[in-house]
Image (cartoon, rainbow, N blue to C red; front, top):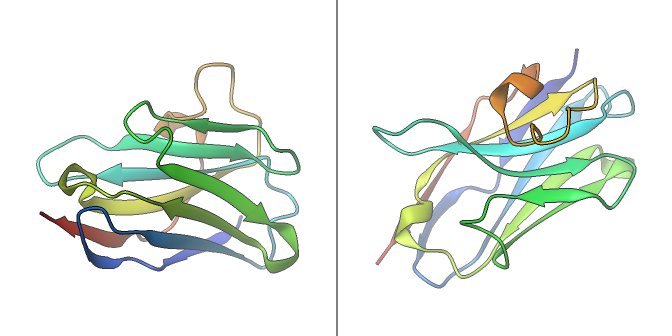
Length: 127
């Protein structure tokens, strides 16, 4: 198992930027995939972005393509989500999740592909 802790959330005005970090301990070497999910009040959790650890392969929800960038730093055991041009509809609790098995095609942004979860961190975007 891996313990995941998110950081970097907060409040920002529309058009602003935030970078979320997901730190894994004791390490992320055994992970295959790490993803970011979000859940807005009254809505279901949705996959935002995922990365195939050890490669440059990444996946994005249509709603964030071109604005969000996922990256990983194996030396720091951390996965980042750079969020630019934030919109009020991006307001949600963001959580990172990790998988020890490679998700099947088409399931990289599905919650069932991930077995370890962080506690989550709030992102609030005001108009």
